[in-house]
Length: 512
Image (cartoon, rainbow, N blue to C red; front, side):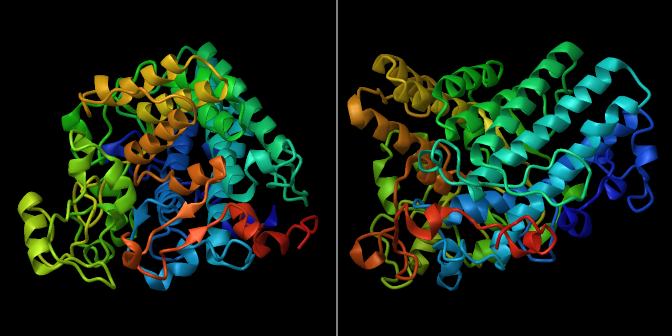
């Protein structure tokens, strides 16, 4: 793919970094490392794997806010969803998915650019690691990590550029270009089924290699893939593919050694890995990208204008569904009887004073909005914070949904919901009793509550074929007029991004 080679990071300029903290820095000059050096030893290949992990939190395309995985979560998962609010009417074309059919849009180009950069580097490792000097177990482990990176990237690309499985004619609709080597030849789009076949194959191979290697990542290396990350990726991909038996099985495996976080950990700011985090991205003071970072957009205590001027908030409708006994409700601002602007939704000075009394680290010049979020906290600087990608809560919810759609005993589904909320202590008063269609709605509601702000909203609605419904302030909701809309599942080619022209310009087998 000439687009990849011209615009993306190649293995020869891969950031080669060591394990974490002070050592999570460049080990070699990034512009002078040849493939021969990278693949000379398994130790060097391990640095290359760290470099791929680093790609997940780097600013690209010289556009503020384009920061790797955080961008996918924020712009595509959060902003475009139904329960995540931000008062940015000038961004209505992005938030309302108006760009998805424009092959020249930056927002169509970016995910393609980002994930194929990971894929290109993963391919180089997969194809060359066996040549490196070093123990066979190390080669197996490193190849498994690269295969997991590739599978994860194609899983995300399939969600963005492929139709929802239910509308794909059993996977026969076109999706993405499948690149599995280092050639630059023209390749046509593969079908959604072929894409998931590759994902499944990569993950099956990766799991086998992780197992046979007998190795795992160090406890501090939450940012690197291991067998649990492969299981979690498999679970998410299978859920999207409506392969419910596989989704259930792999979700259970993925969360086996990752107990749910305590209430104190849940309320600590979602900026540091804990026992529930299966996989995340490292970001600390020595690696921050400042105003471009994810936490500069969502950490309520950040001094970045993107936070102070436009705090992120939960939809009023979802907030109303959270029981008062649930600790997750306290992480959003109850407006009580404080006044707010009926046109913009911005809270009064009295509301801001009330919010600062609850959360003293709220910057002095921040604005306040009803139901604004205090879930995410920048751990340092403008926007420092580790970013979570998989945690056990998501896996429990995948299991519950997969069991429901297989028609398994409702008591088993209810038990999973109770484990997530009641047994965990997030709401000791909770008890799942819903049955039938109401049980599915309970799963959806608690996915929205549990995973709010973590980049799932739009992707979940797309998978379910549910409309995005945002209620306007004038109609009793909390969205401004430009964003208080209903987006039906059929809109914008089923919320499916078109292949960007920058790919078609260099790949003659892509039909415009």
